[in-house]
Length: 264
Image 1 (tube, helix red, strand yellow):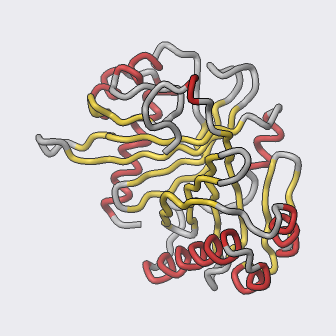
Image 2: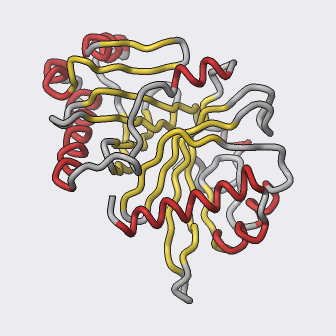
């Protein structure tokens, strides 16, 4: 991870931690742009949206992080209880930072994907099991580039084109997909999933970022029901996918959205 990306990660986590766990209004006011763009489907643009969240009974536990360029992403969860109910909620949180006119770093844009399916903390722990943490793993820039290329090829050829025959060339033999009901081991589990989706998983890829041994892809899944998803991948020394996690959320009905650009 570059020094700039590491600084962005630390800056964003300090702000988000202040918002959710520490309830530090001063840090929130210092960190968020007054005109922050909000893609959470129920939230509103502007810093007042975040200042209002300070009064909410909520916390956030970060499990994994990625930072590349001006983008930072966290994989984690909101413990129960939280403003969304009495169950823990898994999430992927994505942030864009930018220096304002006074050359002061600010958070200027936010996306998230919220998954409500786990019903217990044990299920959340299962869905987030495994290893990999972008900011802690020393990986060369060459390998990071190769890791991202593997994921791009995986999403393009396997998901969008249905080329299941190349799965074994992109996945490690020890590949594991984690979800709240258990873990699915071996490349054949992904082949079975793609087949169950009719041979393809059609999507529009919005962004891919990579750091350490992790790659995160933010996707719009296309189908009878539109969904937003963040797929997190850990890759091994040969730049093959060895662990895989996902957060998936159905699109919010338009009559319920709080801004003009929900989800993306």
